[in-house]
Structure formats: C-alpha cells, structure tokens
Length: 92
Image 1 (tube, rainbow, N blue to C red):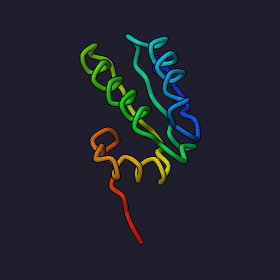
Image 2 (tube, one colour):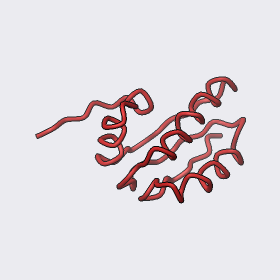
Image 3 (cartoon, rainbow, N blue to C red):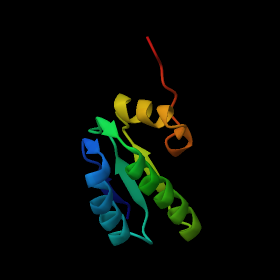
Image 4 (cartoon, rainbow, N blue to C red):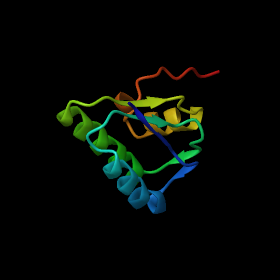
C-alpha cells in the first residue's frame, strides 16, 4: 500500500526537518508525495526530496510526486532539478 505525504505550501528551511521526520517514518514502503499545494520550494527541502528519491530507489521502493503545482515545477526548473518530477513546463 502506497503512503501519501501531502507537501506543505512553503517548502522552506523550517519545513525541511519535519519533512525528513515524516519521510523517515515511511521508509521502506512505497510513497507518493502530493505537491499540489506547494507555492515555494527552497534548497534545503529540495535536498531532502532528492535524498529521499535516492534512498527509495536504493530500497527498491516506488517514490512518486503527484499533482505538482506550477510553482513546484517552476521551482525545480529554476534549481536544475527537473529530474525529480519529470513533467514538462508549458509557458504562455
């Protein structure tokens, strides 16, 4: 059974430690991160997500990001981390 983690709206420095704690609590199980409410993502939370993606891959467990908000995907693109959530960004 996949565990769903709903990401907060501000993935900033203060959100990094709670995110690590939540992800460690579901390690070893399939996880899906809902990024629909994310309005900002900072470097520390990006590091947490990249590390989690690598950890889940090493554990042989699914790690997915679903419903990414435009701000989430734009933040990933600005930080060069589009591989974390490979969705094309369409600009008007």
